[in-house]
Image (tube, rainbow, N blue to C red; front, side, top):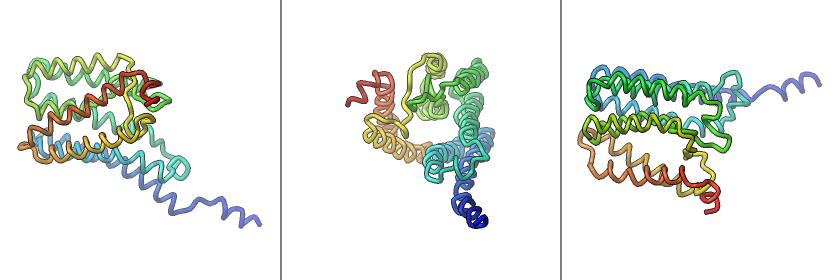
Length: 242
């Protein structure tokens, strides 16, 4: 009887292996970040884009995989949320900060200032106790600095215009707007997920064409950006009612 009870309580080794495999998959985002940094030092923007895309794909799928593998039950010796935050800061903040210093997208006199500003504001954004709210939103601008950096690279706007947008986004970190978390959004869910996947697919396709990306891809992407912002700022009860 004792041996039988012990066998029943022993975790399924396949489930345990799958759960730890998900954690390893999440951790691979650190390798993507390192390779993106090396590409930045080499001035190889194509390679940087590829590794940025790889990091975003890891981040986009690891949460779904973690819930499927039930990592909180079968691999609870590791804090997956902490690991995810560490990797997000690396790939969404540190990598683009280095890009801003090395690339020719900002006035040279303010490149270091700009990089330091997003490091500091993002440190605040990431460590708020309610940075991710209970109803699955990001409070304040959610440190999409990698996306901002890619738009700067692709759009070729004047340096000071890029700097102006960067400072605006820094200010938005402190404005407590609840930005939607697309994969866990509970209202207009199907439409939001559909547009998010379409935005990602077309965006990745366009980025893979760099430096000969179709111009229409960049401008068409703003349809989703506008939708995302509108859905984030309107009262949530009205959006839910729809």
